[in-house]
Image 1 (cartoon, rainbow, N blue to C red):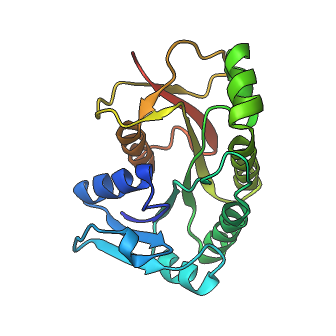
Image 2 (cartoon, helix red, strand yellow):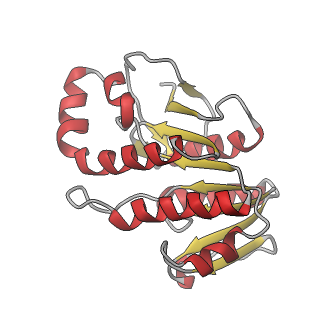
Length: 212
């Protein structure tokens, strides 16, 4: 499958890129700086541009079957305006180019999933510590919900650098999520790739964490 990865130079995006190539996908990594992608592979194409550069975005999207966004802001106090506007631009261009499938990496606590957290964590994380990035994810999710795409929003718990286990808890059921909601980035990357060939969660938001 031909996929475009936005955020391919980030911690999760780097692992996603590696896993996608291992699984035989043809990957276009869309990044701001060429030096941020150190991996070389015959099935890897790197396109340089920012998220408002429609010419470069169209180049990256040409011929793609699906897109995956692992974009995320780097601040807990400043809204990632560039990413919010970038997601809007990506969605519009995908609709124009007829590319339907988009996977978006969000977080538990975004949208209605803030009510899936136990009250103490909802207060400490969703209302205080992660209030700004979760607000950004919520707006991006709303943009997808109002699009014509076949989207899937994946909302993992706290991300770790742990090993790949594949032993995950996930679903769409509205419920209070209990226990340790952490998950390794590599497990998240693998789950995202699995959704490319799975229709179960099309136009749905999925919470995701490891069994402990």
